Image 1 (cartoon, rainbow, N blue to C red):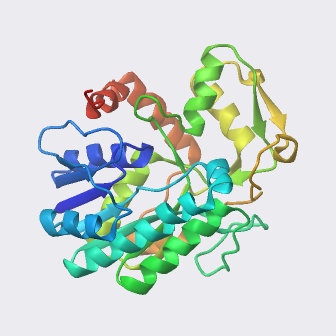
Image 2 (tube, one colour):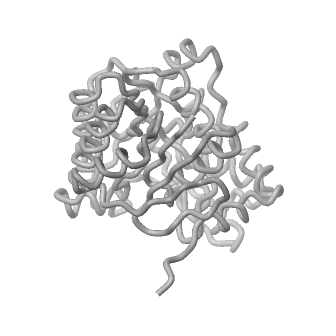
Amino acid sequence: MRILITGASGLLGSNLVLAASDAGHHVMATSRTRPVQLDGVEWREADLIDPEGAGALLAEMQPDGVIHCAAATDVDQCEDDPNWAFALNRDVARHIAVSAREVGSGLVHISTDAVFDGSPGPHAETDEARPINVYGESKLAGEQAVGEVHPQAAIIRVNFYGWSPPGRYSLAEWFLENLRQGKPRPGFTDIVISPLFVNQLAGLLLSVLEAGLSGIYHIASHDAISKYELGVRLAQAFELDSSLIHPANSERAGLRAARPKDLSLRVGKIERVLETRMPDTNVGIADLRRLEHAGYRERLEALLLEHAG
């Protein structure tokens, strides 16, 4: 299958490139920052904000399917610059969806649990989306744009962690980096999530694309935990000092954008369709450690090249 992955230098995109390549797909990748270096992967630099740029990219590459990962994900930066957030999270999503439809390509669009307002979960796909910050608003607008122009697209709401390319940190890596340096760090007890290990997510996204699914799906861990509990479990799994993670309240953290409290997701719909149970958080954390010991972080580091000059 010819698969185009946007946002290939990010946490999800970079791991997807490796997963799709390992699965034997013909992988094409685009990113705004660093070229992808992997045998058999075609890389293109493209301005996806330009509708003609997105159209030209897909017309050239003629993918069977697109997994659209590129997005503005810094929640506070989105709050500070809504125009930037909507340009990347709504307008680019629309450009990609229009272009995918025009070349007859399937589309998996990556969204977020932050479309919900944080009321008690777990949240189902049919629950009303009521985002409380610009990031969530822009991602919901992206969902709506994709649904309007490419009705056969799959829209996937996620929350994930894993090993990132150099210079980036997922929440899990932030905890581990500080724990390994003996630095105490806060973990929010009032924010509940369903975090999935990114390598598990990558495999499931490929299954969604291969199955030609359409509509909205939640792909997340089967269980839900607080960010504090995630930090503690990481410390325990990596044999680090869990007492360095101290309970904290997000409302006292001085964050610029409001954070929804309960972003746990129901995953029964995707489990029924793919006939597989979503992994629990502890399974993902164990895999996170196993892959580090197997040299996976070095594979990620070798995947992306800095621009020369």
